[in-house]
Amino acid sequence: MSTQYFAILLLVIGNLAASLSDVAVKVLDGSVPVYQYVFIRQLLSALVILPLWLRQKRKQRKLHKPGLNFFRAHILILGSGCMVVAVTHLPLATANAIFYAAPLLMLPLSTMLLKETPPFGKVIATVIGFVGVLVVLRPSEFHWAAVFALVTAMTIALFNITARQLPAEQSIITTLFWTSVLSLPISAALALFHWAPIQSEALFFILGSASLILLYNGLAVAAYQKAQAGSIAVAENSGLLFVTLFGVMWFDEVPDWLTAMGIIMIVAPLIPWHSLRRRATR
Image (cartoon, rainbow, N blue to C red; front, side, top):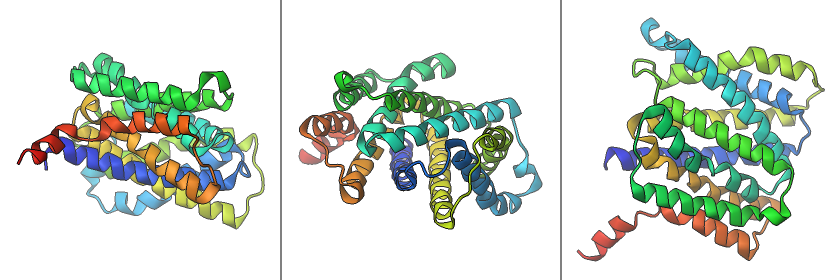
């Protein structure tokens, strides 16, 4: 398997984890204040990754480029808060369709920040995907929570693009640990304004969400360090298949035909048509 296809596989698995994390947020249904959820999730993430971080050699635990890591940690806070609002108030498929505008945003960002030139085919694929997002969203039926979903999409794009700027000597475990730790002061301060009593069941779902999103972040860092962002970013759209399936199975959110058409438009660019053609001619 080529490095590019391996990176795509990592993103698909990561998006499955992120989709299950969204399910946990949907189950909470706004019962936990937004930034209380974010703070607890980041704290649990730090505690989950701490033993793995400590098992590394001292040199591997070192934080490189603290400014970049600080920036990524606070992008994560903003995106997580907006994600909670969007998933709570929109159907899973609709919210995630907007989230997956991120690959389209990553094309100009990768060009500006990383000086990458994405292949023309990838540009066309992501444009088709964005049209699919518009079909799912249907601007004539615009919901205010979609604004929060759009902000989440931008933070996802920035978070993944900046992963390419992380130094190779900083391990994925170290990156995840410091991202969680650096996000705690601000998220704690925001959480204190709206702190509320929390039930053990809610803590269980937040722990599950934290573990799953930690897995996504780790796989995303690994993927974007292995391949150019413009070449693999379209694989982020795979999560839309997962959340649509979960929405039907667990929340009775059956997409109408327009939503289904938009999802097809978003997912179609993921299919390696050239590989299928080569196999068919053998």
